[in-house]
Every structure is written in C-alpha cells, then in structure tokens.
Image 1 (cartoon, rainbow, N blue to C red):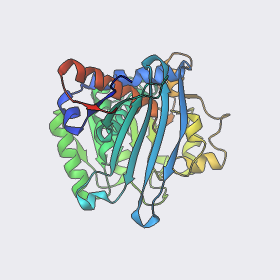
Image 2 (cartoon, rainbow, N blue to C red):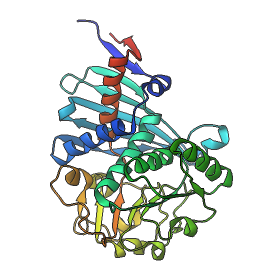
Image 3 (cartoon, rainbow, N blue to C red):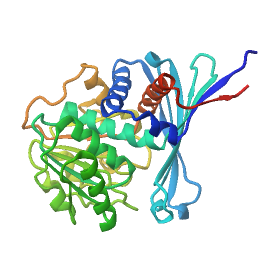
Length: 333
C-alpha cells in the first residue's frame, strides 16, 4: 500500500489563510447550488448528550458533495455555559474523505468553519430573500456565529444601521465594539429585544436560551422584512409563521425532525410542513425556485446547518492552504 497522508489545518492555520468575505460566501453557495441540483447526499444530523447537567450536546453532521468529490463528517460540541470557562460555546472538527474509497484526506479545526459557514448561509439566504434595499439589521445573540452573520450580511448590504442585543450587557457591548471596529461603522448595542428588532429590514435571531421562551414578538416584525431564526431553543411565537408569504429552510429533512431548533413547535403543530414550505435555499440558489419576488413579501428563513456547507468551505480552505503553503501533512498509514 502506498503511503497515505492527511492534510491538517489547525485554528492558527485557518486564521493565517485570511479567507475573504467573498471567498467564504462563494464556497458555501457552491455547496448550496450542488444541493439544489440534486448532487449531494445529506444524512440527518444526530446528537449526543453526555449528561443533562453539562448543559451541552454534540452535533454530528454527515454529507457528500459530488461536484467537490468529497464526503465529510463534522462533530461539533455546543455548550451554552462555556463562556464561564473562557471558552467558545462551540468546538468542532471536520473530517474529509475520498467518497470512493473511504480514504481519509483531511482534518480541519471546524470551530471557525462552523461560525463562518453559518454566517455565510445567513447572508446567502438574505441575498435571495431580503429586499435589495435593506438598510437596517437587527441581530439577537452574540455567540461565535453571530459575528460572521453580521459581517457577511454587511458585506452584501452595507447597512445604514446595525443593532445588536444579547442577554449579558458585557457580551453585547463587546460584540458591538468589535463589529464597529472591524466594519468601520457604528454598531448599536440595544438593551432589549423590542428595541433591537422593531422596524428592522432583516432580523436574525441567534439567541442562546436554556429552554424555549417566546421573546421575539410577531407584532414587531414589519411588512417586507426577512426573519432568520436559528437558535437552538425557540425564541419566537407560534404566530410568526402566520404573517409569512414564504417560508424557506436549508434542508427540510433536518428541519422536520429532531428535538432542537427554533421552529420545532411550528413543525409539531403543523404550521410548518411540506405543504407550507416554499423551498429549500439550495433550490433558490440553483435557480429552480423563486426567491423574493416583491418588496412587500414578509419571508422567514430557518437554517439548521448543513454538512455540505462545512465540506464546501473546508475544501476551499484546503485549496487556498495548498497555494500558500499553510498547514501540515500528517502520515496516516
């Protein structure tokens, strides 16, 4: 047997790549287009909860993207109390394989990949589903994915006003300050949900609730807005779907099952079903279904997170690392 090597990118390597906003969005959208064209396999994510008292769980995401000639498995821990230990709430590892032989090809730190690809899916959703004239962004939550939501959305829309809120004042204030410095524009830290959300063109809800609680009120959503709720625990009212002209998800197979997710109650009560679903985002990205068709449409986009996005972004990072001579090659066998 010939020697087998694995490409390895750790967190420092990925930081050194300096992926641009356009590179991140482009890589993730390529994965979505492949999904829309039926060129992928997505296995529903599974969860491991070691102990309820740990207040966290592991997500295991699996997929195959034919145009990229790659299969992948990502394992990511999601622990809401990690901030008390000075740690990010999510740690992840992405493993890439040759889909024909099962030979391992690469291992990547997937912590920042998870953050980047989540932000990219939010931004791509807005690209197709938000008003082109959107100028006010409201963002609830300040976890790792939140930074990339705001950064990549602003890359596409160049907002006039960005409002952020999170439960802890120190969290929202530091989050706003970092965004303001990186985006070179004011970012407003708002003390309450209503003040953040009301009247915004795009509303992203990425809260970290210990249990479901309807903190985002339907009456605050203005006509023509795009609402993107993707918190692990539901923070929205059941009535939210009633005001929507279109409901879009990233993958219906993942959204219709499992115990976690911001619209779980809407699925269980039949408010969100195959009959009420407009499309998956990949179908829209591939041009097979319509996105926004008028400024008056109020639209909801729920994404659970796709293995395809991790695989696509991981492949793009490996290609750039090869060009720049970044990373390590590990002998496997």
